[in-house]
Image 1 (spheres, rainbow, N blue to C red):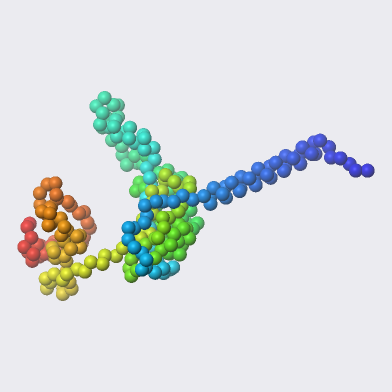
Image 2 (cartoon, rainbow, N blue to C red):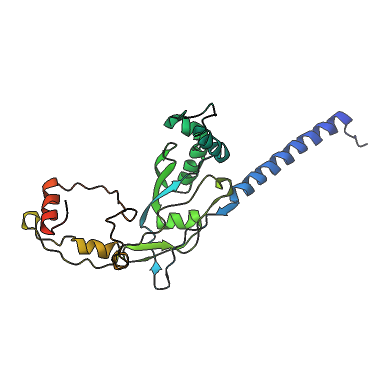
Length: 256
């Protein structure tokens, strides 16, 4: 004679199966969410890459992920209040730490993105909430797989042929990926007069700078940068000694 399970036993079995199904659904949903990606647009260069070859798979790329500000509506309100004489926030400037705490990426966001990069084989060099930058490096092969792109090269230049893809939950946090492309300058630099005190290798002269920065069209239009509002300053780093700069000015009869 068969024995039917009691009501309490049947209820327990259904409870166990319900828990198992719920966990299975959760795991499948999580996996699907992790697989969903979003495309970061505007990463393609307006040049023809048809004559380029596959980039060496082992070539190391040094990349940066700039992160977006959050609470942009609150930031806009604060900017207006800082200049409003009737606002209690008038000229109550924030410190760097206060600004980061209110409008910068959260520690959890930075940690999540850095962890994802490492899980894809990249080396995270630095991750800064204040700078809103995550700097990392990895091979061409690693970048192609992680970001779903193809990278081609020509000499010292390289570029991606498609916009990169990142997890969908990074949308609105990751602004882009810098370093997937690099175009080495191809302009030929003319040899300037050499100052013997500083060796016999070619040096940049004023006309070379005009060529390098493509200033000829501006000069032909009478825009020389000598009067406002045409003057543009380029902030660059250099370790040139002062006496070398003085000799350069004298050599080319430049204004002080």
